[in-house]
Every structure is written in structure tokens, then in C-alpha cells.
Image 1 (tube, rainbow, N blue to C red):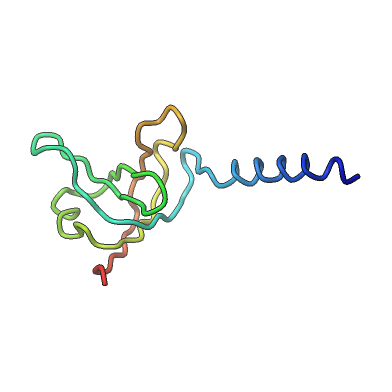
Image 2 (image 1 turned 90 degrees about the horizontal axis):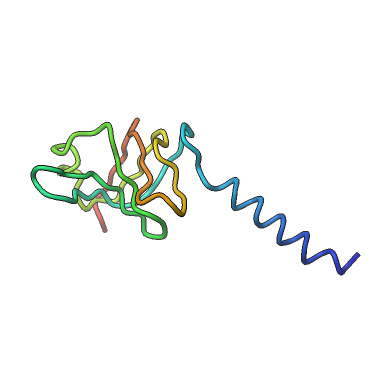
Length: 103
């Protein structure tokens, strides 16, 4: 019984990790800082997480993103491009945003 215990722990950990990876269409909330990257012709609105990937945000204007620039934010939205090893930057369509100034 004890010989199988490490294998069972590995399988459980892998299953748990798979459940934590959001899929396209999932409604999630992310925390981080709002940034506007790129140039004037091709701006990209990004949520930079402290401990995770940067997410490209759609559904908000560049002007609205600049108002929130560099503030801590919680963004609620729908995954449009899921994170993965072949994904350059996952995407999220913003449904709502709560921001607060950095302390």
C-alpha cells in the first residue's frame, strides 16, 4: 500500500493542476496591475500578475486602461485564449474591473 502512495500523490497533484488551468469560455477573476504595452498604433492592454502570466485584456478602451494604469486591480471576465505552453499571452474579455491605488 505504501509503495503506491507516492504515485497516488503525483496523480492527484497533476489532476489538481489541470483543474486550475482555465479553459476558453471560463469565467474567472485575476489580480494584478493594468498596463498598456506596445506603441501608439498597436496598443495592447495587459494585466500583469505578480505570480503568474500577463493576460491580454479586451473589452476595455485604451483610455480606460490608462486611467487604471499601474493600479492594483481585480478583473472579472471570460477567457478568450487559454494559457498553455504554445500560447504567447492568454486573453481575457473584461466583464468588470475593481481597482485600488498601490499602497
